[in-house]
Structures are given as structure tokens and as C-alpha cells.
Image 1: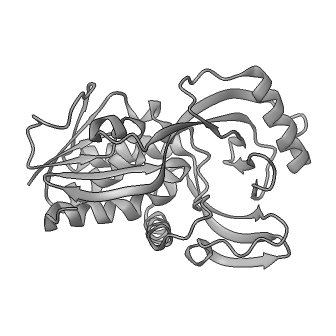
Image 2: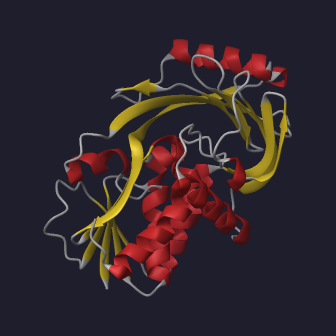
Image 3: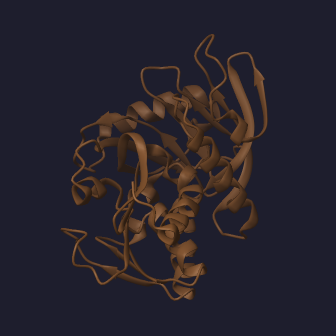
Length: 297
């Protein structure tokens, strides 16, 4: 079957891998290379930062972790870390999906994959190429008229316009990369007005972050960089004195819930927000099933 996938972020590439692996003739069409996608800006720690219960989220997270365990991929390491919860907050609904989870008061410790996303995306792009997937970089105005039996809409923030869905909105996220002083674990604190996280990757640490609904630009704000550094150094004092390498901004494709369904000859898979890396491989398995089964939503 001929399948065209709109989008070359983590969701598009993992779907391309699964479909090509199953023997389909796959083409990926994207406005820019994976290195320029929102996925490449992600902190890369695998757990879904979502508070609402959704059975699919737990299933997709567990499936993605299983894939990362089975891959010998660069940029992927399994590390233990902690997430700080608000006082009295119940166990998060995603807890069953992660490994060796232990709750200690208002924090949860667990082991999960930590992904250096630019390194991993480069590897994944080469892997899909080795499976015969063609990749074209051009802007798509529509999903119609493509030379394919089935189209997969995994275009991230652009997926809403392609689907005529105004429920998807950009949520800006700024991060700062600093040198890694040898931190042994990741730390996430979502108890403040925003979210603060420290995610070590060996060569650098991703410090974040911000959640800015409706943001349209990707130009880092120096004042926000200073605030992120302050918060992260309070959370992890060993970052004091770490050299600042760069600041980056990504626009998360946010939606009230992930849309994953088939409508006619289009499989929609978008709205992952800040959990694309976490959910991608689980979603890719469902995409591959929908392409074959041909169910309509």
C-alpha cells in the first residue's frame, strides 16, 4: 500500500518506520528536516506530563518505553529521576506505565528513557531511509491530491490546518542548554506556576521551561532564559556555574486530547502537546493498524 505521511517529527518518523517495516511503500513529506522540528527541542524524558486520565496515554507510554528498551539507538539512556507533586496530589494516572516507581511523600521516583532528541532523530531518519522510505521537504497546503492510498496526518502544529481542526493550538516552550556537571538523575517540578525541569544528557543539560499558549514565534527571550536558569539552579544547585550553551524555543502542538483516528483515507495522529517523544512509538503502532484495517472514525 502507498502511504504518504505529513510530518517528519518523532511521530511522523516512528509511523514511517512501522509502516515501512510492514512492507508499505512510504513517503514522508515535511516542511523542514527533523532537526528543525519541535521534537528536536524537547527535553526528552519519557513520561506523559498529563493530569487527566486517558487509558490510551498509559498504553502508548508503556509501548514507547518497550521500543526504546529494544533499540540500540544513540542518544537514548535509561535513568532514574523524580517528579515533584503538589502537596496531597494523588498518584498520577501515568504511573503504571513507568518502571520501578516509588512514591516518597510528594515526589515520585522512577526509571525511564532519557532521549537526546536531535541525536535520536538523526538516527531514526537514517533508519527509515534504510527501509526505503522517501523523504521530501516541501510545504503542504492540503492532504488531498497526494499520490497515496492512505495519508497519515502527523504534521504536529501544522496538522490542525491540514485537518480543518481549530482545537489545536501552539504552546510555546523555552529551554536552556548548559554544560552537564555530571548530574546522575533528572528532576521535574510541576508544583509552581509553571514547570521546572533539569534533564541531563551527558554532554549537556536541558533546563526548562515555559508553557505559553498562543505563542507564535521561536525567538528566545533573554529574560526568560535568566528566569529558567534561576529556577533550575534552585532545583539543582550543582548547575551553579555551568556554562550556558544555547536557548531554544519549540511550539508544542497542544490539543485537549490526542486525535488518533481514521477518516476516509486519512489517518489523523496529532495533538501530542509536550508528550510527543513519550507517546510516538505507541501511537505509531496504532497508526499502522488503522492503515491496514481501514476503519473510519
